Image (tube, rainbow, N blue to C red; front, side, top):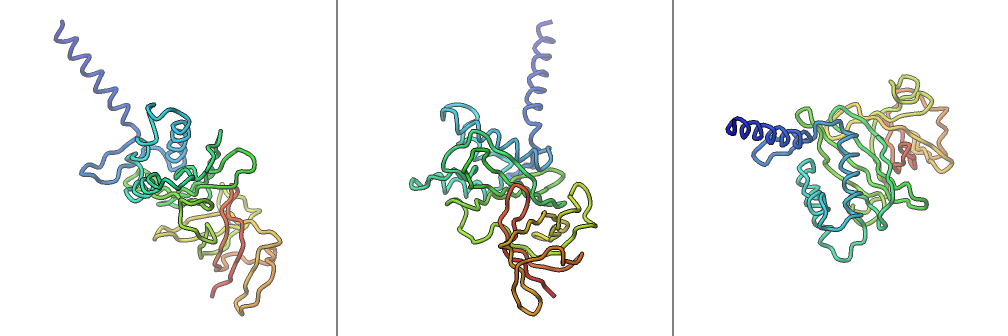
Length: 248
């Protein structure tokens, strides 16, 4: 009876360990590990744990040191975070992209592809404009976090635009769940086709025609499947277009 009981306990322990590892598909040999959840949940779960960790004592689990080495982060991203954490002059959190830790954050999928998804992370606190653009890549039916870029702050290299892509305009023919009342850019990224991002225009959006002339964009004059180059800033809604150039 004792032997059987010990065996039963052993089986239960193994099962608990398996449940604890449900987050990951281990590839072995030091290869990239991925989450079994979809891209949005993979990013959302990681950010939820990170936000909790930065508000707790360093001795608590999970803590920042542990999470910065999470198996679902790419090696390049781990190195990137580590470099920023070692910089004593840095005041920006390398994951949240905020100097002040927010009470709450929001996540929004801003571009979707079969192999890559981008999630925008913003603070729900008022007057906080920094944001993190998180890129999740697909690998062997799972997802991992490949990169984090801050559109404001010191973590990412400074750049004028957080979104700079070439693709095709779609509106009426855009598939669900996208809103056919808005223009969208369908583009290729790192060889992955079918990425989609909603476009938003205002009085400062400048359009350049094929002959090089520039003027304020008039979206009502756009045509379906027109090839364009977009430079924009990512927001919770999508891409806030600053420059649109028509391409042959």
